[in-house]
Amino acid sequence: MSMSANGSGSVSVRAVADQALVEAAPSIASQVLVDDLLEAGWLVDGPSPTDDGGVVMVLAHNFSNAEELALILGSIGPPLSDVTARRDVTRDALDNVIAAENSVSANLGLVDGFNDFSDSDLSALLGGTPFGDVLEGRSPSDVMTFDISIAMPETSAEGGERIEMWSAPLDGSTASLEMTTRQTTDNPTTLTSRISTALGYLLVAWIAVSAIFISWVVIARRRRAQRHHAG
Image (tube, rainbow, N blue to C red):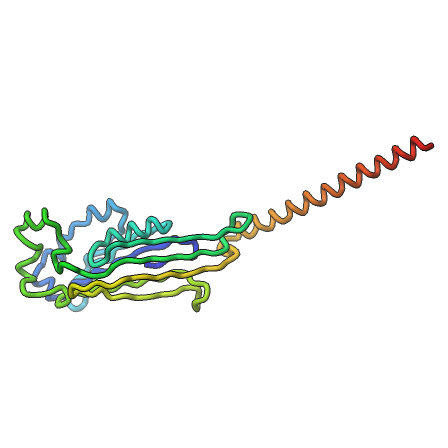
């Protein structure tokens, strides 16, 4: 996952099946159903063959805010679960964002092994865990890995971005994913915001000068009127 300075960004998922898996379940190389993914807004690239006889598929989905980010990450499913995402911003008197705190948290793990990838209805329909005959006698940690990388804006980090990585435990245990970054800015990301700030200050100055000028005109007229009556 990668987040830009304004809180938007993209989530990408790269799924790789090695040669052994392709040989055991050849359909994953040609019969992957992606209609539901496309309807949910994912961009799909693949499956494509790899040099070592496997296949790779890459999915991508953009997000505009923290709420969308949480929904997209949550839709990935086990071993990623209980995803939350927040972005709290601080604004100045002209409503420009001057600071932000970004946070993401989740749980990692497969508490019930391969069964976490299914549900009771699907297992009943298939007569057991999907690909149970192929996976018999094996645990998730024997046949797969799950790594996640998160990049979020961080003012104090080199390059203005902090990147952290996690690997999900696949032995029945769980782990926590937690990351928080902080930004401080006078909203330099857009020229429009700078112009609006400058115009705001000019407006205040113009009002002040106008008030002084009007007061000077009123005082000057009073003095002329007083001299006229005195004469």
